[in-house]
Length: 224
Image (tube, rainbow, N blue to C red; front, side, top):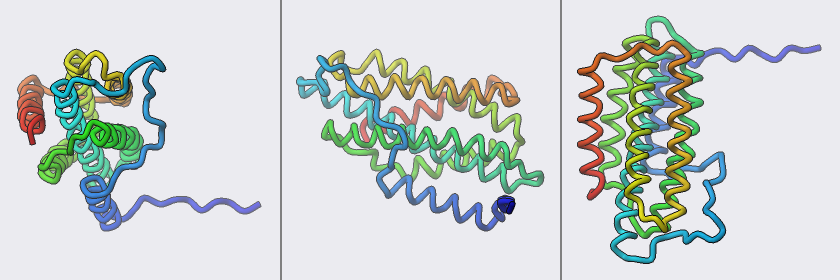
């Protein structure tokens, strides 16, 4: 009986090329979801009828789409750092990539929802991606515990952010609400998994800086 060849970790050059390809795909190519988009109740309207409420829903979903662009950058950068650091950690890289794949579903869902609402993605998506990639790379280079701690804190803040959006989305926008609710569940699970994998608690000043950066992003992305 023949044995399957052992899959070796990618070389640093290959890892960087893969990360560059992921960046270009995230920013310039429509994402494809592996899971079906969350459905709406049979008796629920898919979009708000009031123009002002539809515009609000579009702005909120644009912010959520930016968040998913950033999530792609963060997970890609952290996986790259885990794979190419002084002590390569392939297991951690694969865990981060698995979470990132679910974030790709979120990216595709929010992208499609923007189209349905007649809204556009943020004009600054390349900038958001670059900034998030830098943060993810830094967190990843500080070691597995810090990298996982960064995941925990990021996902907790995103979970709280999505809860606020569920409060703000129009009551009759069942399609957007279904997407946001599923995203919230996924983010909470990613945080739990990172915690169980050995995350280090981040210092309070770092958490505060993360919240401040997220506030700037959400405020700007709401309009641009």
